Image (cartoon, rainbow, N blue to C red; front, side):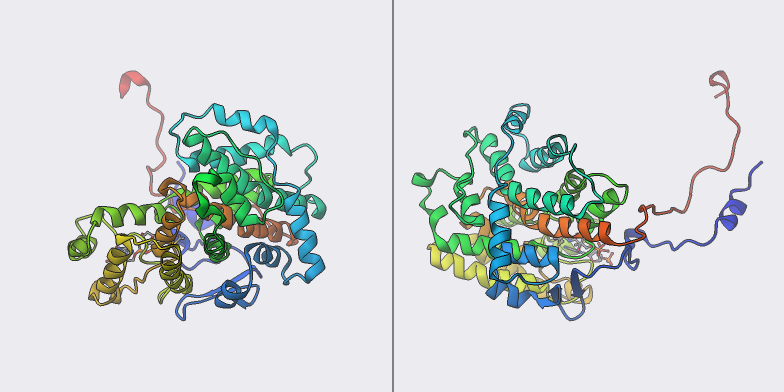
Length: 401
Ligand code: ACO
């Protein structure tokens, strides 16, 4: 009979670290976070400076290449992106198979996975040129696919990308019927969305990026790897929080109900949490949340939107920040707390919020996938476990059970 205890002794030592709270799965030169100080750097550049001075495509180039592009490099990158925005015509048919009220994240994950079927044959993950082409295709096509998910869900025909527009404006144009939605051509809307894309572009080894790397470590193609990242992002504890925040703010309804919500969040017999609060790494203000909060006020003022949910959100933040429960646990508003109010002001439906996040995070995911493949000696990801099941036992025939 095998002694399971001896088996463990024979196979060496494990670190038992549920949720990987203190396990580094990789080295990476892309993004740095100091969770205690509330610092976030992309390739060494503070997020505050990139948010103020850069744009999403430039940030994507930075994440992928490690340096900010000069003028010629940026133009060449933008040209490449612009010339790969179209979806394959056959991929449009793919959407007809979805139920009309499918969640856009379900369609997005499936549609991105299906890119493997369109661009697989000529793809060698060990070839830097092929890896770069996959990155261009993904960053270019993601807004087109995302807009198609939205339009299919409301029964509108899919719109082709207008390549004389810039990245974010092109996306807004594909999403909405322009004559009835003049908002989409409003530069304030485009600037706000571009800023949100910059802030969501990367965040080192979060759940979805780690998923992309784990799938990538098996040698799977980049489209399959990114599709896996999309499904990981969908959960409410991760990117799905932006949708959950807005639903929760709507449920709270008025500032008078905030106190009740805070009490519920503190009750350990209730699974209710304040969505958009807390973070595994930040034990201080999420620097992205600070920028988004400021942007939220600006966008609403400039677009002339008076959303009572902003008042509820501010009251909730104020109440949580002076409550011992949240202070002791260092639970601050995170990136998702105010982003939904901006998306709503731009006319983006709630079910699309996490899709917005996925468009932006694609740059980070693919930068990590490339870094992983560029790193010599990368190994397949293969966590271990502490076995807690039955000891060795003999099979019993059905009649004797
Ligand atoms: N509301 C109430 N209590 C909370 C919250 C919250 N939002 N977040 C954490 N806590 C409490 C936990 O109950 C726990 O309390 P305890 O020590 O008394 O048991 C303590 O704070 C630590 O929480 P953990 O769940 O252990 O922290 P973890 O690092 O595992 O989780 C997470 C981080 C998932 C972000 C969590 O804070 C949460 O669920 N927040 C709400 C969802 C959310 O906003 N997610 C988006 C994160 S940002 C992103 O992914 C883009």
